[in-house]
Length: 126
Image 1 (tube, rainbow, N blue to C red):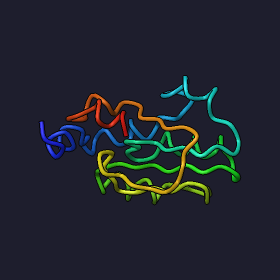
Image 2 (image 1 turned 120 degrees about the vertical axis):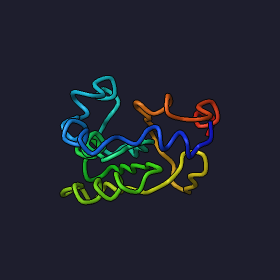
Image 3 (image 1 turned 90 degrees about the vertical axis):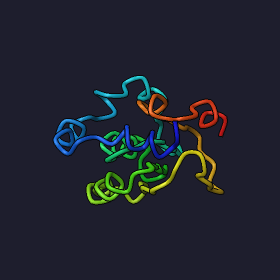
């Protein structure tokens, strides 16, 4: 499966947006909560509309940093619009296979992402 095919498969219909936007780190990624501490730097791979990512930013606080990436521009634009008052939160259109940054992260998360990837092992190795 090509990476573009995987991106197309992962696109959610617009009708799903209200459901996806109700997700929070507390109700959709509870296992992550114990790891999110003030001051941490977090990368959220496949962040979509950023609903869960915003909760991460709240938990790491203003001394922390959260970067959300997603290969689809539409949800990233939505995430930026809904980012709220979190200067420590940024969203980028980026593909996990060629995402480059000089920044180091304390924590990398990719909830509900691997099943959509053409080469999940390669993504994990990065």
